[in-house]
Image (cartoon, rainbow, N blue to C red):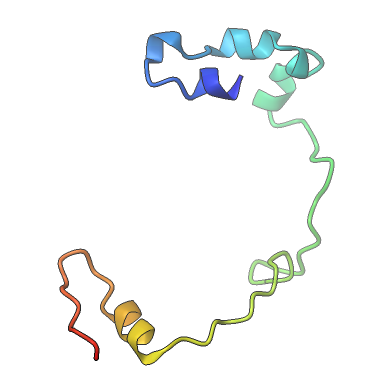
Length: 84
């Protein structure tokens, strides 16, 4: 199904009618989804709009001076200086 959704040729891609008829989606009430009446089965507990608790904690990488310079000047047209 995913392959058919991602086909380069739009005329060969699955259309919404065929997607709705797929066995995975037979029990879905599409009108309730459109009308936004379906409740999420799992809701994240978020204290407020600025809460970061739903994100995984990722430790920053220790980078070399070269990496720091490359990150600072990471632009398409920029040519990196030679590092010895």
